[in-house]
Length: 294
Image 1: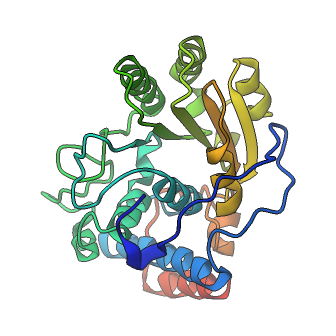
Image 2: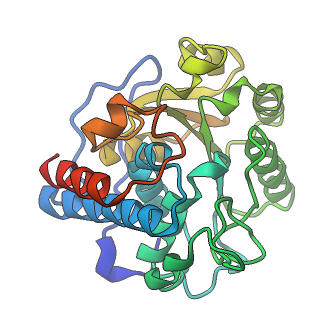
């Protein structure tokens, strides 16, 4: 659990009765007060937008689709912002590395570094590159960017942890677009074969693969490989957390059904046009207004 009490000092209650794929239909006990959760998520998206504008870089729609997922993971994990190399920490890997700005912003909110440092995001000689570097940024476990490889690294780490009989968990966030890569499916096959019950795969199902090979019914596909699969609203923290809290004796896949550019009508309806764009002054104010009124 994070030691950053001023963010959301809450413990996650284990959810019972969560049904496996195809979907979860339950009324979870709220993790946050609605007003504090809404403010937190809005602030993070505002920060992502601000640092993207300042830098001229950033995959804003891809970042916006995973904010709730990241918060859920960091509230669930054992980690310490003042000791990112703590030997008993859980592991998180952002496989869809182009969404690094969302990860940086969440890490800053949890106290891994001062948020003002993100003013240098994407700049020459900045430690905050458009793809994160584990040698430079505390809290980043793996340098990612070559899509499809984060899950394989997560499987290897989970296997090593299990061999050592450590009580640590590994979480990896993968994108639906990168799941065109064969390494994703090879990795899940190994994870199931090795019974890696300390591994949770979070699948950002935001529709990016519409320009790739379509992966229809991803929950069915992961289930066919033998994983424990849950399908949730990827913008509902309580649903994500309840799925993470389910105790199973096999690798877990949580299909997070999300909207690319969530929180902004402009971004969500024009996600491909905004894939790599950074807003100008006028666009920035328009997007901020949309977030404020969402």
